[in-house]
Length: 438
Image 1: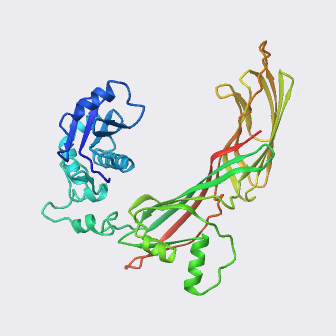
Image 2: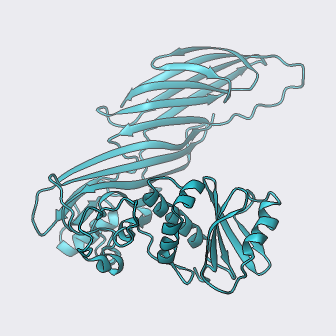
Image 3: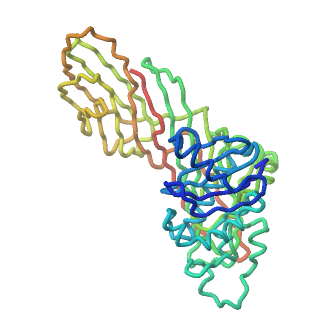
Protein backbone atom coordinates (compact mmCIF):
# COMPACT_ATOMS: atom_id res chain seq x y z
CA UNK A 1 0.00 0.00 0.00
CA UNK A 2 1.49 3.41 -0.92
CA UNK A 3 -0.51 4.80 2.02
CA UNK A 4 -0.82 2.41 4.96
CA UNK A 5 -4.04 1.41 6.69
CA UNK A 6 -4.95 3.59 9.62
CA UNK A 7 -7.51 1.25 11.21
CA UNK A 8 -9.33 -2.02 10.65
CA UNK A 9 -12.81 -2.84 11.95
CA UNK A 10 -14.80 -6.06 12.19
CA UNK A 11 -18.55 -5.30 12.26
CA UNK A 12 -21.62 -7.49 12.35
CA UNK A 13 -24.63 -6.91 10.11
CA UNK A 14 -26.14 -4.43 12.58
CA UNK A 15 -22.98 -2.31 12.54
CA UNK A 16 -21.79 -3.27 16.01
CA UNK A 17 -18.01 -3.36 16.43
CA UNK A 18 -16.78 -6.85 17.17
CA UNK A 19 -13.05 -6.09 17.03
CA UNK A 20 -11.07 -3.07 15.90
CA UNK A 21 -7.40 -2.22 15.72
CA UNK A 22 -5.98 1.31 15.30
CA UNK A 23 -2.56 1.36 13.62
CA UNK A 24 -2.12 5.12 13.15
CA UNK A 25 -3.35 8.29 14.82
CA UNK A 26 -4.26 10.13 11.59
CA UNK A 27 -7.94 9.14 11.87
CA UNK A 28 -10.37 9.68 14.70
CA UNK A 29 -11.95 7.04 16.85
CA UNK A 30 -15.42 7.78 15.43
CA UNK A 31 -14.66 6.45 11.94
CA UNK A 32 -16.95 3.49 12.45
CA UNK A 33 -19.84 5.88 13.15
CA UNK A 34 -19.25 7.53 9.79
CA UNK A 35 -19.33 4.11 8.13
CA UNK A 36 -22.63 3.24 9.79
CA UNK A 37 -24.34 6.55 9.01
CA UNK A 38 -23.10 7.24 5.49
CA UNK A 39 -22.88 3.69 4.11
CA UNK A 40 -24.78 1.07 6.13
CA UNK A 41 -27.86 3.14 6.94
CA UNK A 42 -28.13 4.50 3.39
CA UNK A 43 -28.32 0.97 1.93
CA UNK A 44 -25.28 1.58 -0.27
CA UNK A 45 -23.33 -1.48 0.87
CA UNK A 46 -23.76 -3.31 -2.40
CA UNK A 47 -22.98 -0.45 -4.76
CA UNK A 48 -19.22 0.01 -4.43
CA UNK A 49 -16.70 -1.49 -1.95
CA UNK A 50 -14.69 1.75 -1.84
CA UNK A 51 -16.19 4.98 -0.44
CA UNK A 52 -14.67 8.31 0.47
CA UNK A 53 -16.12 10.25 3.39
CA UNK A 54 -14.43 13.49 4.26
CA UNK A 55 -10.69 12.96 3.98
CA UNK A 56 -10.80 9.19 4.61
CA UNK A 57 -11.38 6.19 2.36
CA UNK A 58 -13.37 3.16 3.50
CA UNK A 59 -12.51 -0.19 1.88
CA UNK A 60 -14.93 -2.87 3.01
CA UNK A 61 -15.80 -6.48 2.24
CA UNK A 62 -18.49 -8.81 3.60
CA UNK A 63 -17.43 -12.31 4.67
CA UNK A 64 -20.32 -14.45 5.95
CA UNK A 65 -22.13 -12.20 8.48
CA UNK A 66 -19.12 -9.96 9.17
CA UNK A 67 -18.02 -6.72 7.50
CA UNK A 68 -14.27 -6.08 7.43
CA UNK A 69 -13.59 -2.36 7.00
CA UNK A 70 -10.16 -0.85 6.36
CA UNK A 71 -9.86 2.92 6.89
CA UNK A 72 -7.08 4.91 5.21
CA UNK A 73 -6.42 8.62 5.31
CA UNK A 74 -5.07 8.88 1.76
CA UNK A 75 -5.04 7.23 -1.65
CA UNK A 76 -4.25 3.59 -0.87
CA UNK A 77 -3.68 0.60 -3.13
CA UNK A 78 -7.19 -0.88 -3.16
CA UNK A 79 -6.16 -4.19 -4.74
CA UNK A 80 -3.51 -4.69 -2.06
CA UNK A 81 -6.02 -3.91 0.68
CA UNK A 82 -8.57 -6.45 -0.55
CA UNK A 83 -5.85 -9.03 -1.09
CA UNK A 84 -4.84 -8.48 2.52
CA UNK A 85 -8.44 -9.05 3.66
CA UNK A 86 -8.75 -12.30 1.68
CA UNK A 87 -5.45 -13.64 3.00
CA UNK A 88 -6.31 -12.59 6.56
CA UNK A 89 -9.66 -14.40 6.41
CA UNK A 90 -7.91 -17.53 5.13
CA UNK A 91 -5.50 -17.24 8.05
CA UNK A 92 -8.32 -16.90 10.59
CA UNK A 93 -10.13 -19.90 9.10
CA UNK A 94 -7.01 -22.02 9.45
CA UNK A 95 -6.95 -21.19 13.16
CA UNK A 96 -10.71 -21.50 13.70
CA UNK A 97 -11.10 -24.85 11.95
CA UNK A 98 -12.57 -23.47 8.73
CA UNK A 99 -15.21 -21.12 10.16
CA UNK A 100 -15.22 -17.33 10.01
CA UNK A 101 -18.35 -15.60 11.27
CA UNK A 102 -19.53 -13.47 14.18
CA UNK A 103 -19.50 -16.38 16.64
CA UNK A 104 -15.97 -17.40 15.65
CA UNK A 105 -14.74 -13.84 16.21
CA UNK A 106 -16.39 -13.54 19.61
CA UNK A 107 -14.95 -16.88 20.72
CA UNK A 108 -11.41 -16.08 19.55
CA UNK A 109 -11.02 -12.33 20.00
CA UNK A 110 -7.79 -12.70 22.03
CA UNK A 111 -6.21 -14.76 19.26
CA UNK A 112 -7.42 -12.31 16.59
CA UNK A 113 -5.81 -9.37 18.38
CA UNK A 114 -2.54 -11.28 18.55
CA UNK A 115 -2.72 -12.14 14.86
CA UNK A 116 -3.58 -8.55 13.89
CA UNK A 117 -0.42 -7.38 15.63
CA UNK A 118 1.63 -9.86 13.60
CA UNK A 119 0.09 -9.53 10.13
CA UNK A 120 0.10 -5.72 10.02
CA UNK A 121 2.80 -3.40 11.37
CA UNK A 122 2.02 0.33 11.57
CA UNK A 123 -0.60 -0.23 8.88
CA UNK A 124 1.65 -2.12 6.47
CA UNK A 125 0.81 -5.79 5.63
CA UNK A 126 3.30 -8.39 6.82
CA UNK A 127 3.53 -12.16 6.60
CA UNK A 128 0.09 -13.83 6.39
CA UNK A 129 1.17 -17.45 5.84
CA UNK A 130 -0.71 -19.77 8.25
CA UNK A 131 2.12 -22.31 8.16
CA UNK A 132 4.63 -19.74 9.36
CA UNK A 133 2.46 -17.98 11.94
CA UNK A 134 1.50 -21.28 13.53
CA UNK A 135 5.16 -21.88 14.27
CA UNK A 136 5.20 -19.30 17.04
CA UNK A 137 1.56 -18.28 17.69
CA UNK A 138 0.12 -21.34 19.44
CA UNK A 139 -2.88 -20.25 21.46
CA UNK A 140 -4.47 -22.78 23.76
CA UNK A 141 -7.20 -24.68 21.98
CA UNK A 142 -5.81 -23.95 18.49
CA UNK A 143 -4.58 -26.95 16.57
CA UNK A 144 -0.89 -26.46 15.94
CA UNK A 145 1.53 -28.81 14.16
CA UNK A 146 3.94 -28.44 17.11
CA UNK A 147 1.43 -28.80 19.96
CA UNK A 148 2.51 -32.38 20.73
CA UNK A 149 6.18 -31.40 21.24
CA UNK A 150 7.57 -30.54 24.67
CA UNK A 151 6.89 -26.91 25.58
CA UNK A 152 10.46 -26.32 26.77
CA UNK A 153 11.92 -27.32 23.41
CA UNK A 154 12.33 -24.32 21.10
CA UNK A 155 10.68 -24.34 17.69
CA UNK A 156 13.41 -25.22 15.15
CA UNK A 157 14.35 -22.44 12.77
CA UNK A 158 11.24 -20.34 13.49
CA UNK A 159 13.10 -17.12 12.69
CA UNK A 160 14.46 -18.62 9.48
CA UNK A 161 10.96 -19.63 8.45
CA UNK A 162 9.68 -16.08 8.94
CA UNK A 163 12.56 -14.15 7.38
CA UNK A 164 14.23 -16.73 5.14
CA UNK A 165 13.84 -17.43 1.44
CA UNK A 166 11.82 -20.65 1.96
CA UNK A 167 9.15 -19.31 4.26
CA UNK A 168 6.39 -21.34 2.59
CA UNK A 169 7.88 -24.69 3.68
CA UNK A 170 8.95 -25.90 7.09
CA UNK A 171 11.83 -28.27 7.68
CA UNK A 172 11.67 -31.80 9.02
CA UNK A 173 8.92 -33.16 6.74
CA UNK A 174 9.07 -36.94 6.32
CA UNK A 175 6.99 -39.24 4.11
CA UNK A 176 7.19 -43.00 3.64
CA UNK A 177 6.40 -42.63 -0.05
CA UNK A 178 7.59 -39.50 -1.87
CA UNK A 179 5.08 -38.50 -4.55
CA UNK A 180 4.36 -35.51 -6.76
CA UNK A 181 1.01 -35.01 -8.48
CA UNK A 182 0.89 -32.48 -11.31
CA UNK A 183 -2.37 -31.49 -13.03
CA UNK A 184 -2.59 -29.24 -16.09
CA UNK A 185 -6.12 -27.84 -16.23
CA UNK A 186 -7.13 -25.73 -19.23
CA UNK A 187 -10.29 -23.85 -20.16
CA UNK A 188 -10.78 -23.21 -23.87
CA UNK A 189 -12.79 -20.12 -24.89
CA UNK A 190 -14.28 -19.89 -28.36
CA UNK A 191 -16.60 -17.62 -30.32
CA UNK A 192 -17.34 -18.95 -33.80
CA UNK A 193 -19.45 -17.31 -36.48
CA UNK A 194 -22.41 -18.97 -38.15
CA UNK A 195 -20.23 -19.57 -41.23
CA UNK A 196 -17.61 -21.51 -39.26
CA UNK A 197 -14.91 -18.85 -38.97
CA UNK A 198 -13.23 -18.34 -35.60
CA UNK A 199 -13.89 -14.85 -34.20
CA UNK A 200 -12.17 -15.28 -30.84
CA UNK A 201 -10.22 -18.16 -29.38
CA UNK A 202 -7.86 -18.50 -26.43
CA UNK A 203 -6.90 -20.92 -23.68
CA UNK A 204 -6.45 -20.10 -19.99
CA UNK A 205 -4.64 -22.73 -18.00
CA UNK A 206 -3.15 -23.45 -14.62
CA UNK A 207 -0.72 -26.02 -13.28
CA UNK A 208 -1.79 -27.51 -9.96
CA UNK A 209 0.60 -29.51 -7.83
CA UNK A 210 0.29 -31.71 -4.78
CA UNK A 211 3.63 -32.57 -3.19
CA UNK A 212 4.31 -35.17 -0.54
CA UNK A 213 8.09 -34.94 -0.38
CA UNK A 214 10.51 -35.33 2.51
CA UNK A 215 13.14 -32.77 3.42
CA UNK A 216 13.79 -29.65 1.33
CA UNK A 217 13.62 -30.84 -2.30
CA UNK A 218 14.50 -28.71 -5.32
CA UNK A 219 12.21 -29.30 -8.32
CA UNK A 220 12.72 -28.39 -11.95
CA UNK A 221 9.85 -28.42 -14.44
CA UNK A 222 10.36 -28.51 -18.20
CA UNK A 223 7.58 -27.57 -20.62
CA UNK A 224 7.43 -27.48 -24.40
CA UNK A 225 7.28 -23.67 -24.48
CA UNK A 226 9.17 -22.07 -27.34
CA UNK A 227 11.26 -19.60 -25.34
CA UNK A 228 12.32 -22.22 -22.81
CA UNK A 229 13.40 -24.68 -25.50
CA UNK A 230 15.36 -22.01 -27.37
CA UNK A 231 17.16 -20.99 -24.19
CA UNK A 232 17.95 -24.60 -23.36
CA UNK A 233 19.37 -25.22 -26.83
CA UNK A 234 21.61 -22.16 -26.47
CA UNK A 235 22.94 -23.31 -23.09
CA UNK A 236 23.59 -26.89 -24.24
CA UNK A 237 24.61 -25.91 -27.81
CA UNK A 238 22.15 -28.38 -29.28
CA UNK A 239 19.48 -27.93 -31.95
CA UNK A 240 15.86 -27.86 -30.88
CA UNK A 241 14.25 -31.28 -31.15
CA UNK A 242 11.35 -31.62 -33.53
CA UNK A 243 7.91 -31.33 -31.96
CA UNK A 244 5.24 -28.76 -31.27
CA UNK A 245 6.27 -25.72 -29.27
CA UNK A 246 3.91 -23.16 -27.81
CA UNK A 247 4.16 -19.55 -26.73
CA UNK A 248 2.91 -18.79 -23.23
CA UNK A 249 1.34 -15.40 -22.51
CA UNK A 250 0.51 -13.68 -19.23
CA UNK A 251 2.40 -16.17 -17.08
CA UNK A 252 2.13 -15.77 -13.30
CA UNK A 253 3.96 -17.97 -10.78
CA UNK A 254 3.62 -19.04 -7.18
CA UNK A 255 6.01 -17.27 -4.84
CA UNK A 256 8.11 -20.45 -4.53
CA UNK A 257 9.36 -20.18 -8.14
CA UNK A 258 12.90 -18.84 -8.55
CA UNK A 259 12.21 -15.87 -10.83
CA UNK A 260 15.89 -14.99 -11.20
CA UNK A 261 16.61 -18.40 -12.64
CA UNK A 262 13.51 -18.25 -14.81
CA UNK A 263 14.55 -14.91 -16.30
CA UNK A 264 18.08 -16.14 -17.04
CA UNK A 265 17.50 -19.79 -18.01
CA UNK A 266 13.73 -19.86 -18.70
CA UNK A 267 13.36 -22.90 -16.44
CA UNK A 268 10.74 -23.30 -13.72
CA UNK A 269 12.74 -24.28 -10.63
CA UNK A 270 11.32 -24.12 -7.12
CA UNK A 271 11.24 -25.53 -3.60
CA UNK A 272 7.56 -26.53 -3.32
CA UNK A 273 5.22 -25.95 -0.39
CA UNK A 274 3.94 -29.03 1.35
CA UNK A 275 0.60 -30.27 0.06
CA UNK A 276 -1.54 -28.72 -2.67
CA UNK A 277 -0.83 -25.39 -4.36
CA UNK A 278 -1.12 -23.60 -7.71
CA UNK A 279 2.28 -23.43 -9.38
CA UNK A 280 1.48 -21.14 -12.31
CA UNK A 281 -1.18 -19.63 -14.56
CA UNK A 282 -0.88 -18.91 -18.26
CA UNK A 283 -2.80 -17.95 -21.38
CA UNK A 284 -2.36 -19.00 -25.01
CA UNK A 285 -3.85 -17.28 -28.05
CA UNK A 286 -2.04 -18.93 -30.97
CA UNK A 287 -2.24 -22.48 -32.29
CA UNK A 288 -5.24 -23.58 -30.22
CA UNK A 289 -6.51 -27.11 -30.91
CA UNK A 290 -10.29 -26.94 -30.72
CA UNK A 291 -11.65 -30.19 -29.23
CA UNK A 292 -15.06 -29.87 -30.93
CA UNK A 293 -16.52 -28.39 -34.07
CA UNK A 294 -20.22 -27.58 -34.13
CA UNK A 295 -22.18 -27.24 -37.38
CA UNK A 296 -25.67 -25.87 -36.70
CA UNK A 297 -28.54 -25.36 -39.13
CA UNK A 298 -31.68 -23.61 -37.92
CA UNK A 299 -34.62 -22.99 -40.26
CA UNK A 300 -37.69 -20.96 -39.36
CA UNK A 301 -40.68 -22.41 -41.23
CA UNK A 302 -43.29 -19.72 -40.98
CA UNK A 303 -44.36 -18.35 -37.61
CA UNK A 304 -45.16 -21.62 -35.84
CA UNK A 305 -42.43 -24.13 -36.77
CA UNK A 306 -38.66 -24.45 -36.64
CA UNK A 307 -36.22 -27.14 -37.68
CA UNK A 308 -32.98 -27.49 -35.77
CA UNK A 309 -30.08 -29.66 -36.92
CA UNK A 310 -26.81 -29.71 -34.99
CA UNK A 311 -23.79 -31.81 -35.88
CA UNK A 312 -20.94 -32.09 -33.37
CA UNK A 313 -17.53 -33.45 -34.39
CA UNK A 314 -14.79 -34.40 -31.94
CA UNK A 315 -11.37 -33.38 -33.26
CA UNK A 316 -9.13 -34.90 -30.57
CA UNK A 317 -7.48 -38.32 -30.82
CA UNK A 318 -9.46 -41.49 -31.40
CA UNK A 319 -8.13 -43.07 -28.19
CA UNK A 320 -9.45 -40.19 -26.10
CA UNK A 321 -12.98 -39.35 -25.05
CA UNK A 322 -14.89 -36.41 -23.61
CA UNK A 323 -17.10 -36.57 -20.55
CA UNK A 324 -20.22 -34.62 -19.65
CA UNK A 325 -20.80 -33.09 -23.08
CA UNK A 326 -23.74 -30.67 -23.06
CA UNK A 327 -24.97 -28.70 -26.08
CA UNK A 328 -27.46 -25.89 -25.41
CA UNK A 329 -29.36 -24.64 -28.47
CA UNK A 330 -31.47 -21.50 -27.81
CA UNK A 331 -35.07 -21.41 -29.05
CA UNK A 332 -37.76 -18.68 -28.88
CA UNK A 333 -39.67 -18.14 -25.64
CA UNK A 334 -42.99 -19.06 -27.28
CA UNK A 335 -41.88 -22.68 -27.79
CA UNK A 336 -44.82 -25.03 -27.18
CA UNK A 337 -43.72 -28.53 -28.27
CA UNK A 338 -40.52 -30.27 -29.34
CA UNK A 339 -39.57 -33.62 -30.81
CA UNK A 340 -36.03 -34.99 -31.11
CA UNK A 341 -33.90 -37.49 -32.97
CA UNK A 342 -30.35 -38.01 -31.73
CA UNK A 343 -27.63 -40.46 -32.74
CA UNK A 344 -26.25 -40.56 -29.18
CA UNK A 345 -27.16 -39.19 -25.78
CA UNK A 346 -30.45 -37.62 -24.78
CA UNK A 347 -32.12 -34.31 -25.62
CA UNK A 348 -34.97 -32.35 -24.06
CA UNK A 349 -36.45 -28.87 -23.98
CA UNK A 350 -35.66 -26.79 -20.89
CA UNK A 351 -38.26 -24.04 -20.62
CA UNK A 352 -36.48 -22.27 -17.75
CA UNK A 353 -33.52 -21.34 -19.98
CA UNK A 354 -35.34 -21.47 -23.36
CA UNK A 355 -32.89 -24.02 -24.76
CA UNK A 356 -32.80 -27.46 -26.30
CA UNK A 357 -30.38 -29.33 -24.04
CA UNK A 358 -28.51 -32.24 -25.60
CA UNK A 359 -26.43 -34.33 -23.20
CA UNK A 360 -23.86 -36.99 -24.12
CA UNK A 361 -22.21 -38.74 -21.21
CA UNK A 362 -19.20 -40.07 -23.15
CA UNK A 363 -18.08 -38.73 -26.54
CA UNK A 364 -15.26 -40.69 -28.27
CA UNK A 365 -12.63 -38.90 -30.31
CA UNK A 366 -12.73 -38.64 -34.11
CA UNK A 367 -16.48 -39.26 -34.20
CA UNK A 368 -19.57 -37.18 -34.83
CA UNK A 369 -23.08 -37.06 -33.47
CA UNK A 370 -26.18 -35.28 -34.73
CA UNK A 371 -29.36 -33.96 -33.21
CA UNK A 372 -32.48 -33.13 -35.21
CA UNK A 373 -35.40 -31.35 -33.59
CA UNK A 374 -38.76 -30.03 -34.69
CA UNK A 375 -39.98 -27.07 -32.66
CA UNK A 376 -43.59 -25.89 -32.61
CA UNK A 377 -44.19 -22.29 -31.57
CA UNK A 378 -47.24 -20.55 -30.15
CA UNK A 379 -48.80 -18.23 -32.69
CA UNK A 380 -49.36 -14.73 -31.34
CA UNK A 381 -51.58 -11.92 -32.62
CA UNK A 382 -49.01 -9.21 -32.06
CA UNK A 383 -46.67 -8.16 -34.80
CA UNK A 384 -43.81 -10.62 -35.13
CA UNK A 385 -40.47 -9.32 -33.96
CA UNK A 386 -37.30 -10.70 -35.43
CA UNK A 387 -35.78 -13.32 -33.10
CA UNK A 388 -32.20 -12.49 -32.26
CA UNK A 389 -30.56 -15.89 -32.07
CA UNK A 390 -28.29 -16.29 -29.04
CA UNK A 391 -25.21 -18.45 -29.64
CA UNK A 392 -25.09 -22.19 -29.03
CA UNK A 393 -23.16 -23.07 -25.87
CA UNK A 394 -21.13 -26.18 -25.07
CA UNK A 395 -19.89 -27.80 -21.88
CA UNK A 396 -17.39 -30.66 -21.77
CA UNK A 397 -14.31 -32.16 -20.16
CA UNK A 398 -11.62 -33.97 -22.12
CA UNK A 399 -9.10 -35.91 -19.96
CA UNK A 400 -5.49 -36.29 -21.15
CA UNK A 401 -5.93 -33.55 -23.77
CA UNK A 402 -4.70 -29.96 -23.84
CA UNK A 403 -6.15 -27.46 -26.28
CA UNK A 404 -2.92 -25.45 -26.13
CA UNK A 405 -0.68 -28.42 -26.84
CA UNK A 406 1.22 -27.86 -23.58
CA UNK A 407 3.20 -30.89 -22.47
CA UNK A 408 5.45 -31.66 -19.52
CA UNK A 409 8.85 -32.70 -20.89
CA UNK A 410 10.34 -33.53 -17.53
CA UNK A 411 9.88 -33.08 -13.80
CA UNK A 412 13.09 -33.55 -11.84
CA UNK A 413 13.40 -33.76 -8.08
CA UNK A 414 16.69 -33.25 -6.22
CA UNK A 415 17.10 -33.80 -2.48
CA UNK A 416 20.31 -34.29 -0.51
CA UNK A 417 19.20 -37.69 0.81
CA UNK A 418 18.75 -38.97 -2.75
CA UNK A 419 15.39 -40.71 -2.30
CA UNK A 420 13.32 -41.96 -5.23
CA UNK A 421 10.25 -40.00 -6.26
CA UNK A 422 7.08 -41.06 -8.05
CA UNK A 423 5.70 -38.41 -10.42
CA UNK A 424 2.10 -38.37 -11.69
CA UNK A 425 1.06 -36.04 -14.52
CA UNK A 426 -2.52 -35.52 -15.70
CA UNK A 427 -4.10 -33.27 -18.33
CA UNK A 428 -7.67 -32.06 -18.66
CA UNK A 429 -9.38 -29.54 -20.93
CA UNK A 430 -12.71 -27.98 -19.99
CA UNK A 431 -15.08 -25.64 -21.77
CA UNK A 432 -14.83 -22.03 -20.74
CA UNK A 433 -17.00 -19.75 -22.86
CA UNK A 434 -17.48 -22.08 -25.85
CA UNK A 435 -20.06 -20.42 -28.11
CA UNK A 436 -21.10 -20.87 -31.73
CA UNK A 437 -23.35 -18.36 -33.45
CA UNK A 438 -26.23 -19.77 -35.45
